Image (cartoon, rainbow over all chains, first blue to last red; front, side, top):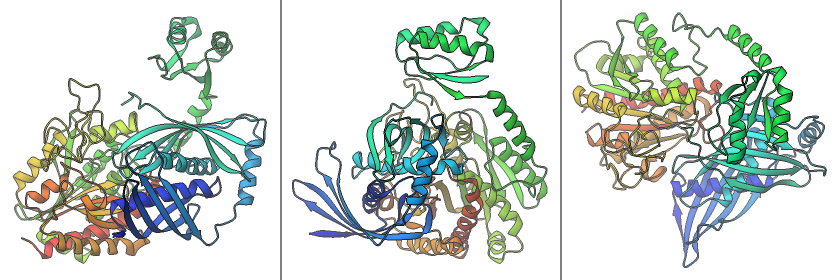
Length: 222
Length: 398
């Protein structure tokens, strides 16, 4: 039997946050990022010998257009015991997400036609600035980080992408765009800032893929 | 000139890079010196040495990347920017730019200006010194009396939460601007004093500006660990050392060797104890858009939970009324996590009933790196919530 949770309680927030990251990964791209706007309802179910299952009703917002929101229902199953298995996430989005074909193609052509590989650092910078040319790069990182976050989430974590420390384009002979990112994840329960490397592939018709990712050691530059 | 980044991957490569330091004729300027395999080495290379250096690196299979293509271009740009924004210390609090982030020196200069401009309302107190011996300043806003019941507000206890110090600066100016014209604020100051500590963790703040933007803790060093700093919001004597804080000095939530070990915390504890008449205590953090009340260290509800919850509801509604910013509210332990040794748990257990913590904008889109243009809107909406709390305290003095 599922037990109702107050939407503002942290177990609900953490599960909701995970869903948003996962949904963003599945449906996002350089022209569209999804973020959690609100938790409408939450319930938790204890499944013997399996784990905890959350039932959620959420509102997601389009990061490039705050007025554009969609309703989302989701289920998250955190597996008991073995912390190396990613949670199972199922979600349904009600309604249509904005079409981003045009913006995607503009970005795709722009990067494909660069003579020198794109390289950038500190997005946003210390003061929160992101230059317009870097917005799609930033959104792409946000989307890809949804995958890394999903793979590493437990009921005791709540991740956010804090900053892109470094991004480097990797030229490919095929039609995909490839970027090598070094990001900082903020884990809000432990308050740790965790450097993470991820290799991200994208194509307008094929969506976002994280082909490689690895947690990095915290530098002794503290 | 270019700046190259070289990352030696093993000891052999490291040695080859270290040898470069001895080649004086290349006139290499190391911005980051060789430290060990895996650590970046940044070096500024004058034009004539570029070719030979790159050839040398390539011959030895040492990979490098060009970090800065043209140093002169950057320098020229920066000079232009500096002339444009004229980063001299402002001459008055009316010309101070509230919509940008400032250095510690600029904030401390602002405080002195504010006091000089309003000597009958504002005074500056030094309540202690940080680990690195920086003064800890509190602004006192008072219309008179002796040891009136008081409200305490602090910002910047976690140094990376930049919107909080910036909001603190704005609050200070706001109090001065409105202390006669705004009925609510005027009536508060008729009966109570307001204490505002804007940079509660100055060592950490300077560190975020010079070395690591994501630094949270103090900068205290202790023998026995290479790691630096204590989480000042786990260092208070309320459930100290219990679950919800870490005993590992390298952790972001390290509680410290004992309660009040951090001078930044001790200074406030001593101030509160010596004052003896503080009725409301608000500690401001970012991010998450939450208004929280005790407890964090225990799931036992605070005896005044009902009243605190009602005040929170009103405060959050007032905050939202300005720009629609949505906040959640509740006790620390049910809303974010169990946390021991926290500020407002201690102040509440000292008898300061109206103890609250804010987590300001945003919810993670920018997180700690909140764009400067959101500083003023954040401060404006938060001020409305603060007024609800202060007015309630004024009307329910105990």
